[in-house]
Length: 406
Image (tube, rainbow, N blue to C red):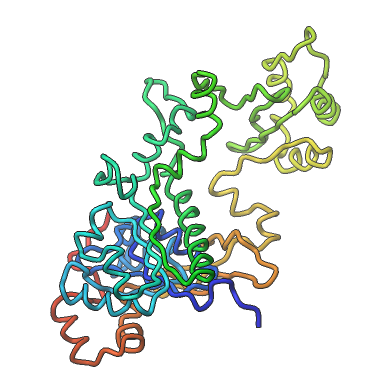
């Protein structure tokens, strides 16, 4: 039987919101047993963000939460309570990895820092994903995605709105990028432990991860003194490039013409006059001719026509159109998972396809506290009285305390 690469690995997941849960979802898709730990008093806020309408338990019916947390198990523990802390330390010896994205000082304030975790399991791997890292003058600031993006330097490339205010790329671009980096960090730490028998502590600053993706701009500024120029859809390194409206509501096609050869080839295919005034590229003329030629064309047909001629092109798919993309459908990218509180909807499967195994989403995101008994009783061996004590103290529960939907 084929095995996923992380089968047999158990992860204690203390993350919330997007970056951390996205990392642990990737690890779960690769076969790890991920135990998502939330406090009844301080749960993952994504649980109550945009829930399925009209349900009695909105914290179990959030689209966001179910996308980022599928294939995991749910354990509720209030780590701020002495019983919650001691129970968590009973769990640590059974885990290979602990991952968290709290503010930098939170884990130490809970008396659950790396040195404490090492006493429970000497080869434990700890990944901390604080927005600004565990050290430095800004270490204790709260790092939400839109703020991290602005502080990363990315806004110097994405530009400014009509009012002169820096604009961000969309919905917290830094979060999934940091999640990918954290998943990779866990894989490297597991390899290191396999080779040396030693655990490790990884300080992963989300701001620094995002800044590392714009290295070309940093090089231009630091070595050549260049100020970033906002070129829109154009690139000075190619003959012509742009995004052009096609037939249909908000249907667009992106085209890159590396040299004059591709321009002439595209012109022939689309019935455009290839002649340009003068010997240099007149980008405005090219844009106007491509816009006129594509305005009444079906975007998929135009894309396939150009692609067959080895002209770099691609549709600009919105969040509705992408669900019907024929290429993604052929690769079985979209899946629907049954859920006891929500009707099924299309969700993306893992982007990693392995020759040795075929990762596939196995189950919906866990209900709040769904696996409390399985973990506390089955894994840790707690008896009825001990579990009752945890419940009576509010350390565990099957619903958030005073949930707020927003």
